Amino acid sequence: MKDFWNERYDEESYAYGSSPNEFFKQQLDKLNVGSILLPAEGEGRNALYALSKGWEVLAFDFSESAKIKAKKLATDHGFDLNYQVIDVLEFKSVKKFDVIAFCYAHFPAAIRKKANQHLLKSLKPNGHIIFEAFSKNQLGKSSGGPKNIDMLYAIDEIENEFNGISFEILEEKEIELNEGIYHIGDASVIRFTGTKI
Image 1: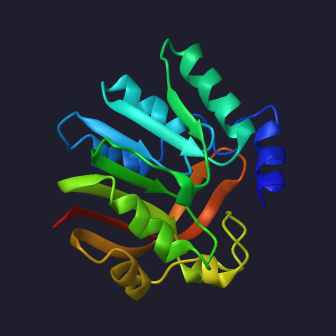
Image 2: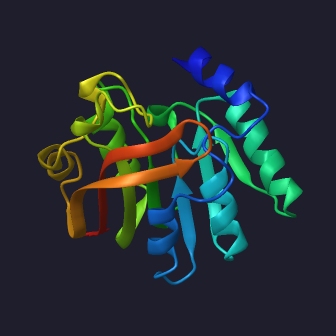
């Protein structure tokens, strides 16, 4: 799996573009500036947006190629991005964050709940979550996402894997994606925002 992502991020173009995810942008703009953790951040498009708005950002991914692209994107815009290459279950932070944003962070099914719960430990009480990922109804669509249905989400799985969260928005929605060359077209996503109880 790591080889797949390194090859994708080795491509010259930014796989999912250099602009932030629209839902992430909309929701982040509603919050007071603070610290944000971006797991599975890929090539840094959301991290760059957060930096440009004055957020203190920590991003990570398990792809070395992702880090190279993300650091270049940030540097090209005059920012220094704190970015780690690490597997999700090995991630540790003494710092607690004001926000964690999951943007298409599709962890392997065998570790997904454990990974999500592990990351929530790094969120402050009353801290915010912003989440968008493909739903199980994405299977068969050409606009991106895992081809394994167990890596896609259902509403009840979100409620189970993010217990301890008070949801503000929780919805499955059909949207039109226009993110780089790999997220294009009609898509079925699950979005939520919430706070840690």
